[in-house]
Image 1 (cartoon, rainbow, N blue to C red):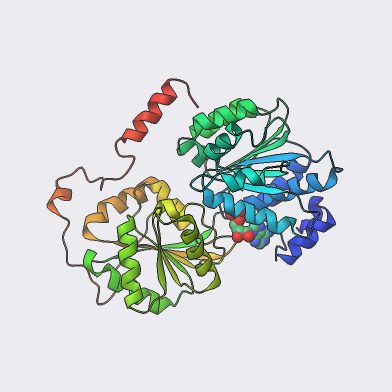
Image 2: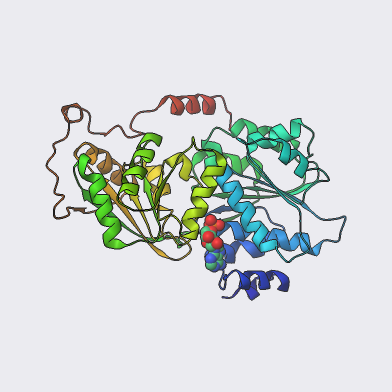
Length: 410
Ligand code: AMP
């Protein structure tokens, strides 16, 4: 079914065409008419499903339809600055050539002054992380009393990353009547609780048939031979773009250097790089100046590279959730993707647990010339075979969360 059937303004349809969006994704197909009709919407949809445009398009349309002076104000809350920038970019793209709504993107980790300046005279769309929004409110840079629509994007991660308190403070400042749109990759208990109190009459959308087509592989290799195998795979498959996930920033920097020595254009992306540098690394990958990014989980949150053909887990992720998140960087927007995990002797048990939790069964492969010889270290053989996986026992953070839940905090 084409976009024309969704009741969108011709100006927006032209924008979509210019950006190569010809057919709505399932979430867009379901959400756009509901949002245009003014409903609260609770949608379970993964990053990569086209959810950003699913809410940006109808909100832009409502903005266009209102007369000057009556234009609605929208607040979009999300968990990370990368996601904030990405949503800001999408909104800007979809709004370019329209009569220019004012879009302000605000996140922490950078000077607040330009954001304070940007908010002078108000804004039509404020896209913000919760902590920085509260700082801006404390500085009287904006008021929330005029908000007509609130979007909570990646609500599960907003709650996961300890934003529950901030969220509560922000919600208390919103007007009694406003449209609420909540998007979440999962419908975990904390999201259900938030949705239940915030939007009891919401229309529910669950996109189950948008499972991306990701071929998952697991290659057994000795720890010390992983870099050599990685170089061989990069040469063999000749991927134009690749993200390799590692466990630490040191690991990222080291592996980037190893690849550079092999004449592979690679750069590290980790949380300690300055914001400007992180943006340049991503831009260089998108433009083809770089071929490989070596990323930590934290840095990779919110990355949107539509054509990414493959990801490689050089180090395994700590949790099954991180595994899902990592492999979700490939196979987006209808493209098929490939996710390869390198398994050494010490991570075999850990990978088995990730598979068990995610109900996966991925055949183990060996590559000629890289057959593993190592045995698991004695420390692991005597352990309870959980490979140190997050979730096997409650971590300190889990316990804090459980205590907060017991106190009835959302
Ligand atoms: P999102 O789930 O919002 O992160 O979107 C994932 C990717 O899909 C982004 O790169 C979008 O540019 C792209 N995308 C969103 N909607 C469409 C569409 N209808 N047709 C083609 N690509 C799309």
